[in-house]
Image (cartoon, helix red, strand yellow):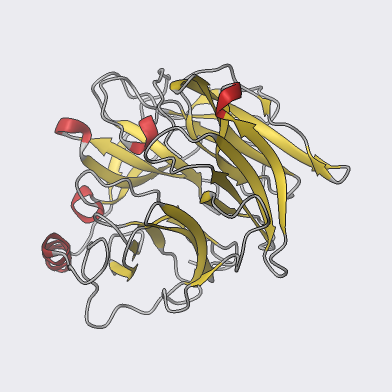
Length: 361
């Protein structure tokens, strides 16, 4: 879904650091990514002849690679390789780090698929959709913390082309494939769902509710829907209507991170774009970053398993330089992990850091 948003500011100025990385190896990788490959539907960085092994206890960042395709890289930028070609977007790790949910978006249709960490076992989440949901464009998959369910949004129409007529918030039980409709919204009523994320206990979802006048985007709220009594409550806003994009719920605390200016990932604006945290009841809203107009931008935030925030860090002329960075929840220790030349000019990476088991590095 593409929320057309505009934003506001914050109050903490973090120091930016960069990890040391092997220059020779990265030059080779950048050259490979620049040359690309036309073998896949969307091109992207060419995988090496022997992609690195993705060990179960190793940290890897999955992101939408240069142009199209799912890409993995270690947090220091090494080991960059494509695991799936084609228009494969919106990845999300399973909580044990063994699988990735993603959207295969081709021919105007979006379907949620699963694969192992090496990209060697892709398969659809659903073999078929329930009656009345067959033609929906599914995206924004989010894995529950216990690994048993995936929340996702289905749109009546391709959300990348225009505002769809309706949105369906769905929860899929992975072992059985059973789909539960957790809510529906209609453009005619001026609201649509986007970007659901799970609470630690699996009893609630945080999401954006995009607001419209006709087909004109007016902004969004951050909202929470809770399960109970055999169903899900309507999403309750915890912010006013404003310029909000992308949300995530802390893996072990009642704390939500969100961006205040997303533009559907385009981020091509001189308005400030920052990150904030907030409690699920709407209290204690606090800034994480403090970027001013025409400066850096922070978008697409997600929590890491150790309570830091991974995000897309946008800089440069035309806002085309997009790195993958992380920062502490209080705004300190902002660190560039994967440089723009590896992410790709103009790319919208949607990064996710693999959860590690206790004792993982």
